Amino acid sequence: MGQQDYGELMAELSTEYAARAPASAAAQESAIQYLVDGGSHSLRLLRPFPPRIVSARGAWVTDEDGHRILDFWQGHFANILGHNPGIVTEVLAQAFGRGLGLQTGFTDRQEIGAARIICERTGSERVRFTTSGSLATMYAVMLARAFTGRESVLKVRGGWHGAHPWGLKGVSYHGSFDRVDSAGVPDAVSEQIVLTGFNDTALLRETFRVSGGKLACFILEPVIGAGGMMPATREYLSEARELTREHGVVLILDEVVSGFRYRAGDVGALYEVQPDLLVLGKAIGGGMPVSAVAGRAEILDLVGRGHGHAVRFSGGTYSAHPASMAAANTFMSYLVENEETVYSTLRATAIETRRAVTEAFAEEGIAVRFAGDKDDVLPGNSLHMLRVPRGEGHRLNTPEEVYDPAICDVVLSDVVLQLALLLEDVYTVHGLGATTATHTREDIGFLAGACRRAARRIKPHMP
Image (cartoon, rainbow, N blue to C red; front, side):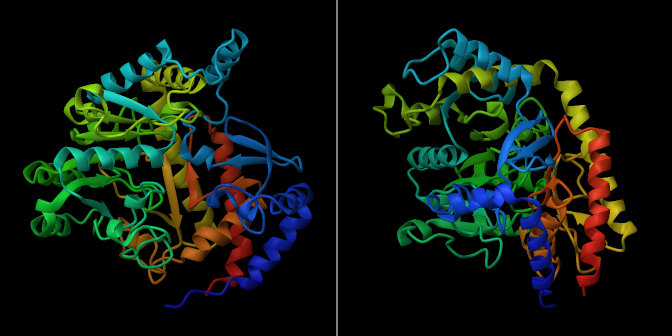
């Protein structure tokens, strides 16, 4: 089935949006004079222009035009407790007040505290901090290659592990998952990347049968993010652990998105899977730039003096930044101390959100579904990729399914719906996004109303 043309509807929505948000429109005109496309991260640059935000608190943000917008982007899904939680901002304000918080180039006790929490809550033996998920996954791959003496890297099609050479193959969400997705990646590097399927246990076994002896690592999101926001099956993750152990391959669980989102620790523990290396980010920083590689000491020690700094994992000037470490230590401590309350609230809010959204669209004659909604490991998943399927019978359990235009109306789900909902003061990414512990029952009711009104505008343009 061909992709429906939504050009007329998008033009209508864009015109209305431009008239409704003149201050953000003017900011875009200024931005494009200095910034590529008007910003520094492509996902933030909604067309025809993004809302320019002046404040954010909890579940809501306010733009330059004075609109209060219910936000499900939530800092690239980092904000478990919503925007600017007081438990973090108050600690940072106090730190700045006593002369600590900006870059010093020294170590402090906050770094020790944050590392201790990660080790205790994930079963890791060592931690090293850096500033972004991309850097952390890159360093994890370098460690695995050095530890094993092998060069090839296994990843799943649709898995996003950041913008570094070993991550930029098989992530094109609007085309083939088998290609290199960026110019500038050396051919020699792309040839080292082996691709397999997410939640396809039979294919995974075959991949290891053919390539297991040359693989340095298998890097895998236990809850895939941009590829569908769906959890791995228990069988798949268990098989990944067994096969990597059997073939001497380093298992890297990329939990930049999932770490500390489902429990105060790693989600791998809920599968009873202990990786060799664990990558964390987003939530652990409490809104500040923090990422970490954790795991087995014998692997991480390759960055240390005892091995002559064999792997140059220095983390960058701003690694373990004082304010970031204060935020991380504070935020993770809070999650540990309030684990039952925070995560039960997250689960309940997620379940209510999916019910309300599905019913709202159904009332207007549009059948929608959330990817990976048939899950036995993580019920109450607070990451939500909404899809408009073209029929019944698909599980929407792999990136190939959720991005196949023959199975789902991808343009409607990702592009049209985002702008239609923004006109209703709701901001979404990938169909919906992430719920937090600060999204209230009233907020979900507001979302449901917005979905109904958006559906009424969209329905006449659907095939």
